[in-house]
Image (cartoon, rainbow, N blue to C red):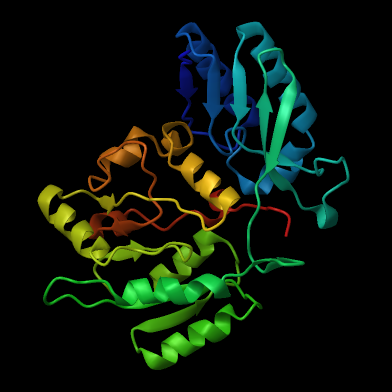
Length: 310
């Protein structure tokens, strides 16, 4: 079997596009020098300031040209994380001044051989295909209720809703009516970081556990997080994510998401801060923030914004 060395690159990108691209080039050159044939850049590697996405999207051809030149010079395949794109793959402009978040694959000959546009599956319906949060909310809430907390511990469940109109709010209202621990929090910002901040502001607990709606949690998830915190004193703990899919394509995506190359975007730093996840290739959709983490500050709503096409 032929073995291929793959480089998974991590960057600390900021608002300076030129500096970010220079940093990416240095890492790509180091990867090629180490014998890598494929290098994977992280999401938002070119810019991490959402306010600049539209401006950077206008420079996409120049950015791709630079990456293509590097691929040819280094004889290296490059998966270019994500870049803001003002046009769809067919060349038509994204409406209303929005941008798409696109991943480009560049071959060692410098050709862009693939592009994948990140898709947010919220309230989407086309023929027999339908992706609604309302279809997931019951299973999520049920898995939260099944959490086996240590004796003497209580929890409140705060769920941020980004002004959905697909029946999610009605389902959440029903859960709130039947269980006083559930509270629906309005998230007019309609992005994850804003929702996190609104929930943190409304919370009363000593610990904050982030749980994502498209995930079903093991009954001992929170109790094991607490146990690891007591054992290690870590500022942030979490557990492994086992991606699964009900259909053939979804199962394939789930399998790919749990392989070492795509999952390593969470880096050894995430693994070290999350002792429950003993395998470095396991990604972390749920996290428990301890009191010291909460004092560090709230998520940056501007930096975390994803201005994807609705």
